[in-house]
Length: 61
Image 1 (spheres, helix red, strand yellow):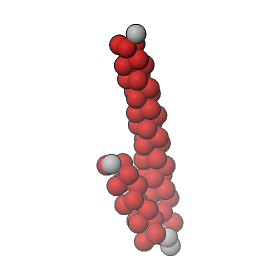
Image 2: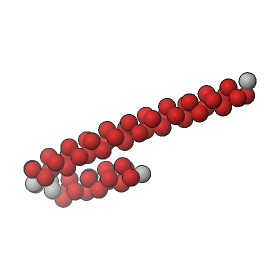
Image 3: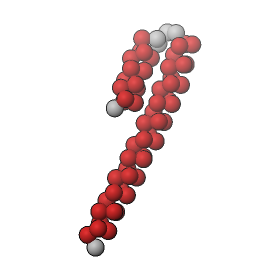
Image 4: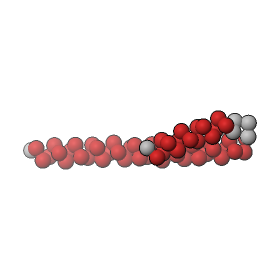
């Protein structure tokens, strides 16, 4: 949720600084980094969810 809030905040700052190319470049870089971090965390969540399901399935056997 923190990363999603950060992305929303960055989107708002990007819109507010659309005519300031220096600030816009910095914000775009921060946004790309936040999106990459969010994607990594989502991939990790999927992996852990799958792993938990496999463990539960083995308990049933």
